Length: 167
Image (cartoon, rainbow, N blue to C red):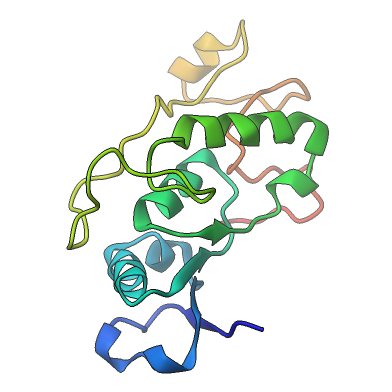
C-alpha cells in the first residue's frame, strides 16, 4: 500500500521532508495553507521527484481548479454526499471545464507547467456567484436570502446542512 505524507501548516521547507519514505504528498492543513504558495511549491517538488499529490477537502470549482493547477493527481471532498443527484452533474461540468489543464484525470496542460510557484491565479471560467432569477436586487445589496431553490456556490456553508461550519 502506498504511504502518504500529510503536509500542513508549518511544513514549509521541501528539503526537510522525508521524500524517500513516502509515495504520495497529501496537502492537508488549514485552507489558507493548503491553497497557498508553500503548498504549491511542495506539490511541484513532489511531482518533480515522481511522487503523487493529493489534496483534501476539495468541495468547490475553485478548489478543484487550484488542485489541478498545483498538479494534484487526486482530490477528495464531501460535495457529492450532500445532494448527489444535483451535485454530480455540476462536478462533471467542472471536470469538463478543467479538461486541457493539469488534470486529475489524465489531461495535459496546453503549455509547460512553471518550474517555480506561480504568482498569478490559475486560468478559470467565470466564477462569479450565480443568482436565481428575481434575486438580482439582493445581489446588489449583498443580501442573499436563504431559499430552498437558491443556486449558490457549492463551497458556501449553509445552516441547513448536517455539518454546517463557520469557516
